[in-house]
Length: 501
Image (cartoon, one colour):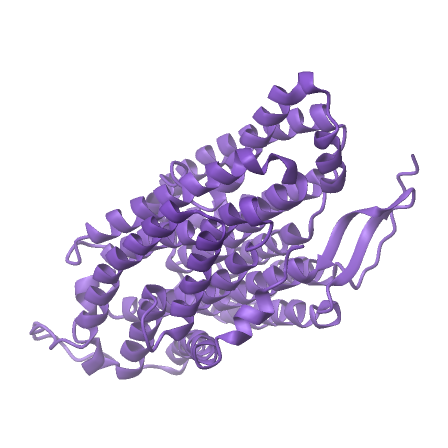
């Protein structure tokens, strides 16, 4: 077989631009004085914006590269509609994370060059992953997205090192299990390209059926870990609490999106003939994940330190359960996984918006307690309105109309696939989640508790205005996306529909 592959640079431009921007930021960091490091936000954010613009020529979803000459249908990288939409979400999420990180950089709590280099490198891997069409590219993309995340978590002094170590050990274990599964699949199918695997498993020797089933099950473990699905969710709370706040927001959206994209690809493209195996498994994971996440979020004490981050962490686990529902439904209908992409677009914007408001509040009250948000309406009306809107979107209540429509689309996929029990479990969990989302929202508009008399805060300097403007921009951008989609929810539903064959 001729293994020489063709390369079309315009097709791989989005992840490539992000990777080049990462190197440019790291090199520029060597020549900037310590008091000018925040200027690196411009090449970091600009590189991500340019990478997102590079998706425009690919919007038709009919481009591919790294194709084998002896098999035109076998391409390692395919910029189809699914890949383009997920890449847009990944790059947009990383862009918001860059803006949220500016206060931490300006305060000297994180090194600018290293942080933005690692963030852009991880974003490049996450952007590569949805376009992968063979297991080799998929695993490389997954590791490129994950390895910098360990270092990002460790950048926080004190608890960061321990959180990063636990995150690393559990992630490496999940990856090792996934690689073992891919080895079994390769032995049973004789190929690494998804099309080869699907065909090879369908025609495999019956004596290899057990090996193939074991390979399919083990392959899903790594992606279940990335999506924080139960029982692979135990790393979430400690990692989010130990990581810097921008990193926790990044992992909750971009890391989760990468895991979902990988899970969708391997189930619908590589293992379509084993839907009787992975379909029920994903359905059970979805039900357990949303239940465990919401139950833990309900128990969160709003007066405890870091309770805001803890609630957002458990909320992300519950939301992961909803995101898994359309994937389980795709096993029965062959369709519906596009609802996961639509829901992920909504979730990514509003969840990072909530983290941006949390970073805003943390500049004055760094304890990250939910109780600290009491009376936010009196202190910062715009921030209170934005956070209330984001929480209502996550809850699926007006005026967060896009959250309601996204949940309805996910619920419909479960009903259409005959997953009645899962639909009921989802409905119950949505009702349970209303409690903690509305509790936090109501707290924003309650009278503030009497504050102890203290010295007046110093007037903000010119250097202090830059972090505030970056956070304001992140909140405004996330709110604009959420409001636009709430006014016209058909935009995201139509945009994400048909992303999978």
